[in-house]
Length: 123
Length: 109
Image (cartoon, rainbow over all chains, first blue to last red; front, side, top):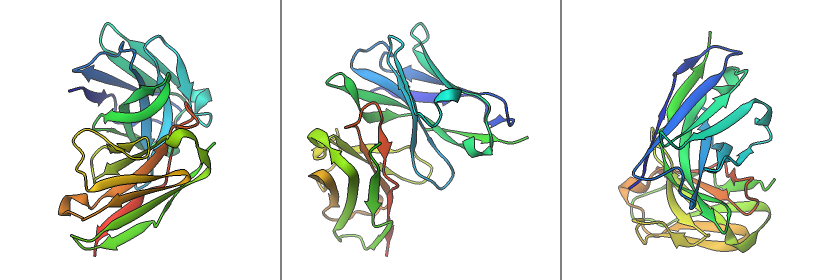
């Protein structure tokens, strides 16, 4: 059974870059059956897609965050990563990595999630 | 962008009762490309339903998804104590522009 685990700093200063890594076990990031996604959830609020990435490097970023987001895949470490630049307090959230089922070549539902990582933006 | 509106915001019910949760889309969700998730406090969301009515692996049959086009429903036929949680719908019709609904909280009355 696949497992995902987020890692990275829990505290980031305003204007700096938030960086998180998701380590996948029990499955491969190079599987052609899945995309790999990042979703965030501000405290007490709902879910927001940040974006997703395919093992070959193709990406989709939420237009509202696109100018600040970069995602990448490291197949040698079976990991994928998120960078979000120029953060503000509004970026404080629990960040989840998740496996996205590839449905007829398109992005589908999230069938496995990491436990989440709380990232606080504060000086 | 397809906007998903979930109602009610909160549902107060007792164990054993039936829960009916609604997810309405701002435009038609083609091929019933809609999923439902359950989230308990401090936990990640868990996939319940995909393709509007297909249960994910290990999900009890008291969870039933239905609907089409712009109106979708998640029904929990008989609430168990562990079912009190927040539920989200998510569309993948406009892939890769996935969107989530705002959630419905099912609380103990």
